[in-house]
Image 1 (cartoon, rainbow, N blue to C red):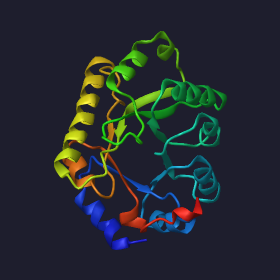
Image 2: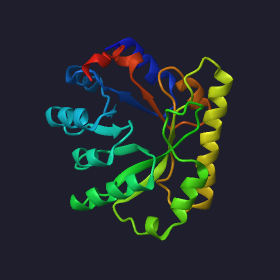
Image 3: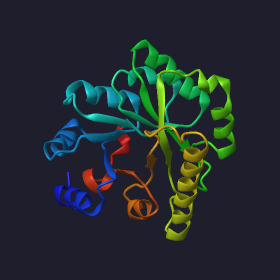
Image 4: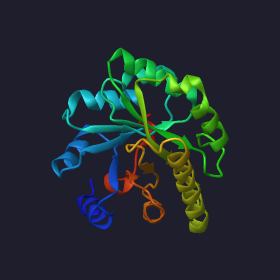
Length: 224
């Protein structure tokens, strides 16, 4: 773990921005090192890896699921997950609601929007999201709470494009807040910005940044 970089990030981000330390593919010992410095919010991309770490690490850790979530893996994280950032379909949200009801929990969720140019990224369009929010089926959900939005910018050196995409996501948040969640004070989160672009994301209104490699170093994807 790069302690100096971690502390530098904490110093430079505003008080209203939460740092999610992305620990995917890093050992539990790295999480423990960050935990010892006071970090409590950690992000994971794979349900089974999150479950394995949850079982052996301090129970006051707030686990954020930030990767593409498959419906058949939801059951692994529902008992303890703090926030799911990556709700990208109504089918997924329905299954989270169903599994959360089994555990008598209300699970916080963010709606993921597709704002990047890459087709490989997931997320709602605004039209798809509004169709869902207007549906009676959405109104029937009792065990999920929508707390905001999430998105990923294109992987590019064009900072102007990255900024435009973050501005788009912020615009989606504002529209949803005004038209669908005006009476919901907990609808307040904009999860955007990673190691390569979080300073721009903060300038454009991010309330949560997801930073991994700057803190924990490069990942060994051969472990997957």
